[in-house]
Length: 293
Image 1 (tube, rainbow, N blue to C red):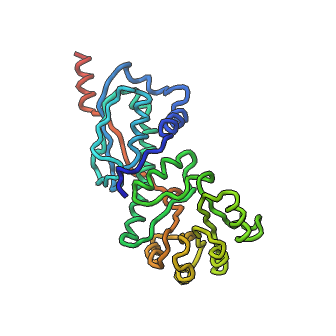
Image 2: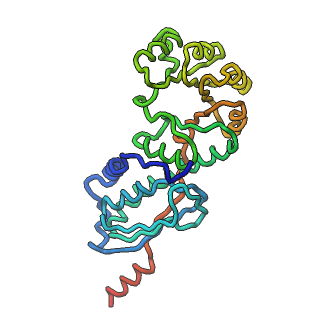
Image 3: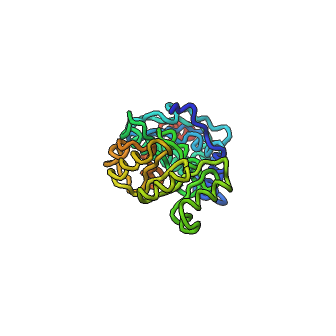
């Protein structure tokens, strides 16, 4: 996917404001140590290999606190970072930079971690038709941000939430009485939308195909069952493998011929990237010496 074609979610500013309120609350008490109006230069350094993601949220934090802050990026979202590279340089009000540092880095670390994991998963199945999907197993409050990061990393977004896609799961089927009854009823209620059904056996797959499900989630199928499912399906519906997916078996699953593999670990088992922000200490020392003189 062309990273330039990935649209930012519309809730960046709201997400940033909520995060700042969570951290700063009624005010940053320790920031009173910094003289009013002091302007400083700072830089952000990445301590490990990573895929950069989250620059809009990072910028949003500092612009919310200091509208005149200048941020010069050395890389863009989706770029590969090496250890010890400078990611960006910042010039702005010192108190604002100190107050926003943790929140800004939290966004950049978490979203870069999500994009880096997605990039790794996508790389494992490179060259195959199968695509990796994310799930709704996201960090509360960061769904749109993490789904953006998944796309930046080279994987594909599934439905955003319960409002924009149909997935008939086990409990829906139990409540409706059967797969057939659930699909028929949903088709009546939402005739314009594709219907995805979760199945646990080949017989359930056949039932879902008999009522023309558009997409079928194969839950915890073995590799042999996945191969059989692809054969039974014969291209009639899109097939999604899910459940118990590990990196070790990811390519094996893709090689069965399924269209998608959904991986909750893309967003729920994220390891943040090690980033740090530092003021230019030599510049501050020069300022102090000038004041003393």
